Image (cartoon, rainbow, N blue to C red; front, top):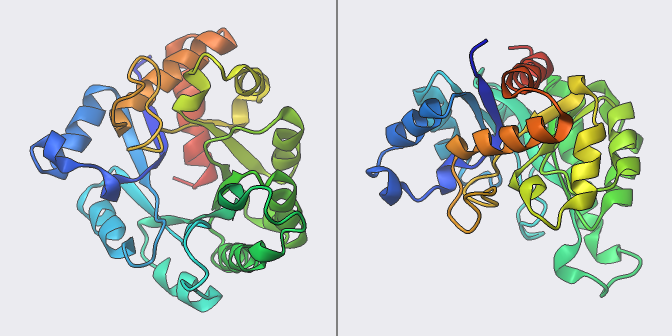
Length: 265
């Protein structure tokens, strides 16, 4: 059984290419050397989306998403029609990264009124996903209850998607699973102090688990502290295989097939 990993969430447009001979080819080749067969390059800003899409068009093993990250300011807006139009390219297989992030104003707004614009932006992405029938890429930070509530209210179960870089509890994971979402783990799961996340990662059903780098952020052990890259998803896979008591080959096959199933590839 040959190894075949998929990095389900990376930001190729944010990588410092000076470390890769100033060319994306070197990023892709290094990933292949670590048995990473496919990558999903995630959009966080519609201004940079053309670069994300161009990279996906240039490499057969790279796909793209389109979306506006919840941390971008309220002044940046989008619409269902705009997202639907931008997602028309066949290399765009997902809507997002979208969701809710209350971290930056933690404690300053107990009723979350200041985040109304985030929730409306989130709803726009979900509606675009349902219209295009493309899965969602979900970001949530310090907003688990509202994230799950908005997903339920907007019938996100019709498309499902990925709870990316999962750092929530098992109850949150179960609610996401009930709505048809997959749970993706980044390098955070390899950190020594991530015991709760590791417990969740051990319990996720085989048919719903994914892996990612979120590169250039969150490099896994043993590369922690360095700039992350898609090749390092292999370390996440190795840690999770050991955690779940399976072989690396079996875990690679399970997680890769989950990605292909979700995106009908």
